[in-house]
Length: 83
Image (cartoon, rainbow, N blue to C red; front, side, top):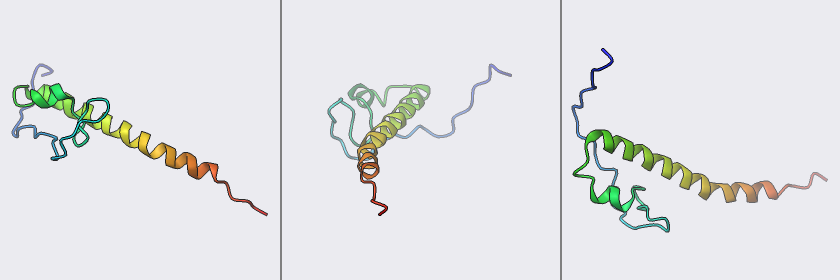
């Protein structure tokens, strides 16, 4: 039973959102894929696509944390006077 593979009924869609610009680390600013991941999307199998999508989600979360962290630091640094 452990050798059975899950059937895929739908193709894994491209994570592209139409914002096709590379950031400073080479990842797309819209979908967070690398250049290689974008170029070979149509040739890779569904298992690899799932791995790429998970990696894109991790990259996006890391980017969001990095973007929000300075704002939190500024708010924490501005402690109100109680007196």
